[in-house]
Length: 250
Image 1 (cartoon, rainbow, N blue to C red):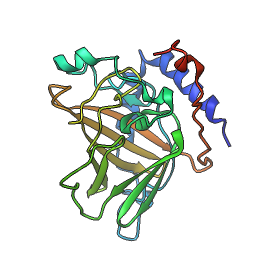
Image 2 (image 1 turned 180 degrees about the vertical axis):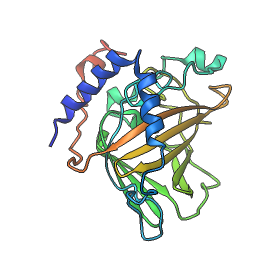
Image 3 (image 1 turned 45 degrees about the horizontal axis):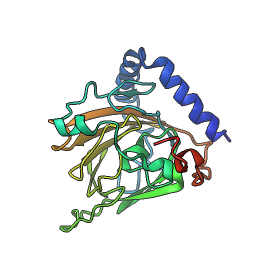
């Protein structure tokens, strides 16, 4: 068993101290992760239908700024922000400080682990961060025609070979993309690609498309590591935050 808070602090410290040198390290890890395994991929667990089984508890790299490199992740570089995005950069309401939902991408960016539960017609993501869950429907359904905006959007998925492709839309405009404060509009469209490259790693890519906020789509890449000896722990948000309530933090 691990110390959840200690793990988060350690990751954030590592992010701050290694951001300048992480690009080369990630490139090496990424290239290794994409190599064909010596036994032709037979060490990758599979479901009865032959699809890779993504189930398990996974450690993820923390991503405070989706534009920058960090341990285990490759940032997108300078983001192609529109005039609208530049005007709203860093000024978005920080919902997390008020124990409101962080939003889909910030859940993904958190340093706390996730558990993936895979079934034939859906994949469920269980986040230790705020103890929330998210369904990805893989039964062939489309997004609803009248998609109501929500904090975490609506996700559908399909398989392209051994890669799970998750398409998420239908967001409100009450959250930020990352802790750095990169904004998004209700037109945000998120596509994720998860490829189990061997028995203990997932190559993860997230592509952001939002014409109101960014002039073109951009991608962040990461590596997830299986932690079979971990389990998700209880996470509680401190809703009586006096600094926020008394105006010391905005």
